[in-house]
Image 1 (cartoon, rainbow over the protein chains, first blue to last red):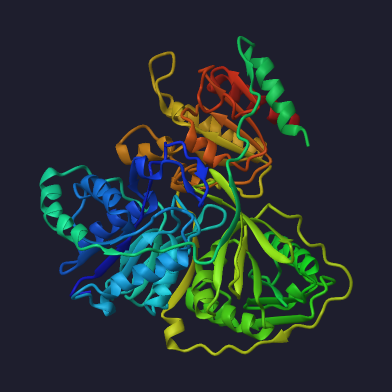
Image 2: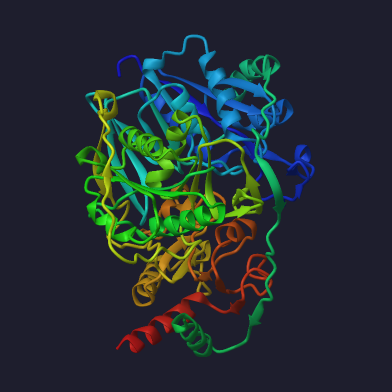
Amino acid sequence: MSQGFHIVVCGGVVPDPLQTLEPVAGPALKNELMLPACLDPWSAHALWEAASLSAKAPGSKVWLVTLGPKAKVQQVMMAIAQKVAFELVALDGPAGGFVDAHETAAALTGAIEGIAGLDRSRLLLFGGWESASRGTGITLQLIGERLGISDQFQGVDHLSVQPDGSLEILERVEGGKHQVSVCAGPPATLGWATGSLPEPRNSPQMGMQNMKAVMPSLQKAKSSPVGLGGIEYRSVKLPKAQRETRIVKDVPVDEIASEIVEWIGRD
Amino acid sequence: MDTVLFLSPVDPDGSLAKPALEALAAARELAAALSAPLAVGVFGAETAPAAKAVAGAGAVKHLAVQGPDFGSARYASDAAAWVALVQAAGASIVIAPHTSRTARVAAGATHRLGGRIDTHATSVAASEGKPVVTRWFYRQRMEALLSRPQRPWVLLLDPGCVAPWQAQGAEPALEAVPVALGERERRTAVRGTRAPVGEAQTIRPDAKLLFVAGAGWTKKQPDGVVHSADAEKLILGFLDVAKASLGSSKSLVDQSGEGGQVLRFMSHLNQVGQTGSTPRHPKGLATCCHGEEPHVVGWRFVGERRAVNLDPNCGWARGKADVLYVADAFAVIAKVNALLAAKKG
């Protein structure tokens, strides 16, 4: 790939994983706009992988396409912009888990089609294989299909570019294994699992550079009022999570071990 | 009137795996509840053995896309087969197992059909003459019951939620559905599967017990030293004698990227929780795990839960586990291994 890749990473903003969440009528999350947010964890892995690949393939460029409330996206970008270089394409709209993935996919496809200078023959469409909100694992696939990409991969942990320009891709399959595929080259859609890269360290210089473009991009963010897409939610509730925990303390190890062995053997 | 289609790829030997038979049972029940006809659609390199497994399900059509091109889990060819089967069946509701293969292709195929899709369904039923689906949101933190008016509506059913269909009676004849592939569908070649690290097979989806190792295994022990090698030996020993599957907390698998002491057989594939898997094992034993919400999320569908750690006030274990043993996991697991080995004889 002498010209490099055009990598579009789709990633939403989600409530910080450590927040306690509670559903309210709508459905929506209680105090949704007050909850601290972060870039969807698997999308973040996709972004780190995109930046790494871009650095290895001269002529490449990375775009981050997101749909979320403008204020939330801005808050998240303050952190993400310090990690890797990218150009932001933002849409202003709801990012909650109850929004229909088909509507979200349509809006994001429109945003990608509107990217000036995007070469679809060099396109690698990246994202998380599932989100931490809806968790359907379908949005990226729908975008890929809408863009006419016929090679799609989900649960990707590794991508390597072969000397002939083909792409070797490792996808998670059952039993803790990876399926190994070789794709002729871009365009392709890759829904990332955790990948193989750690989170990049913060770089204030990178942050300042990115934010120069991020703020205008946020100001230009088109309103995209995606909705429930006809889904009729009959109920949304929290599970009964509380268990009566028996604490076994100051008991000899032999006794504990015997009890565990008896429990394991019980049908 | 709706037509319900059970749709699944077959295994390499042409049979239907347990998750597929569970989806068939769910499709059959939904069709009966809606008084709708049931159809069966399978695809793969060789589909004839699948006919045995669907015998007696009461389907009015038995369709198959078969050929060497459909043996591998490849998006382009699977999508073509999927679309052809749904169209041939005239299906308005499609129920398929949620596996890595179906999850890769179902949404794209649904888009081609102009339909809608919901994944990770944990139950499918009829209510007031309409199909309704239960699924979880925000990584298993809240459960919703929902319905959709659009058709075709494709549903991927999570494994372990429904009793699998038991074949009965004579096997039906499968009707071949032709699908022609072009060069575009053959741009990707599947080369096989690869185990990520080491020789040990530590992830066993069908195991009765999930053993979750936390970061405590690689922390300094009372003698002031880290005992990673001992931890590896104890954990692998336990997996061997208990025939358990291995899960891990995020903090433990992350240590490999941070230069910390690591368990060599552990990878992100073992991770349970917010950015890991949410496995369905009847029992779970957590050791040296701390922290709360990520573990709760990862353990949502584990039936009986017990934990061993040194903190009686552990935020995760209290209220989430059935029993918390406040003890040194190194000592407890060593003894458990010895007892299980002796029992095994």
